[in-house]
Image (cartoon, rainbow, N blue to C red; front, side, top):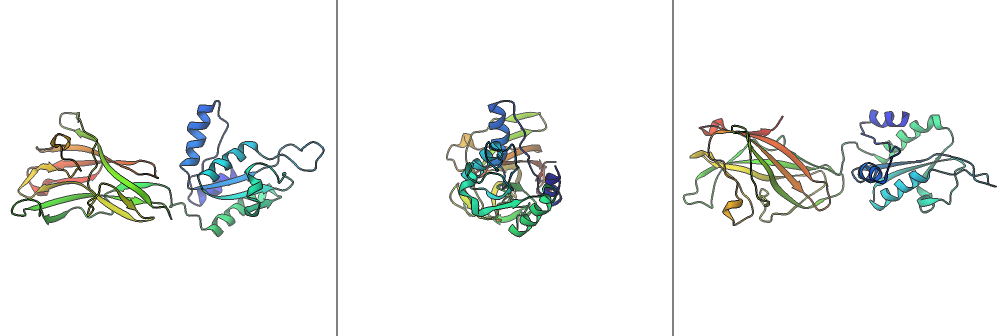
Length: 283
């Protein structure tokens, strides 16, 4: 627990694997936590002494976790207690990367020193985040696709890739929920992709540490009560409709080829004038 506390002090959110009662617990808890983690800390503590040897057995369960982390290509720091057998499990293939320790009381300090030497950052995660904080509140522009090029007001949602070196590939946007607060009813939606700002394809890549924005919704200046969307579809029934003042909750999600699904709920307030309109993150 001292090690876990030291990690929390550095800003990390550590998960310490505990015994599970069945295989479902292992699969749903431990395996998922490893898959969702950015870093892996392996500590091979000494257990019982091996028969007719001076060496001691290490942790079989920890070796299984290490095998999963290795398969997922997680960045790892490996510690082994002195006298633990060397030729065991996955560790036999990772000898050059192992740090040895004798005093368990000093181990937390050694771990912190190694984390700092590796420049592990608690803010870097294999995660996409949707927000309005890094976007302009709106953009006013002429709509070249309509006759007369009328003025439109465009509202975007920003998507940030929080990984330090992994691009998010084939990112697609979906509106998965539209809730009308006035009538307390959810609108039925078709599954279609929505447009990324400045992109013609429904799928884009988001570089490490970078942002991209998608077209959440827009209105014409002359008809601000009619909310318009930019889905990639030629089927009019798949286009959501909001055509009267009120408050609405919209949940967008981003699906990526190599990142967990990210989603967020936003609140849309529609009034009788353009100035009455607000589109913000839902509290």
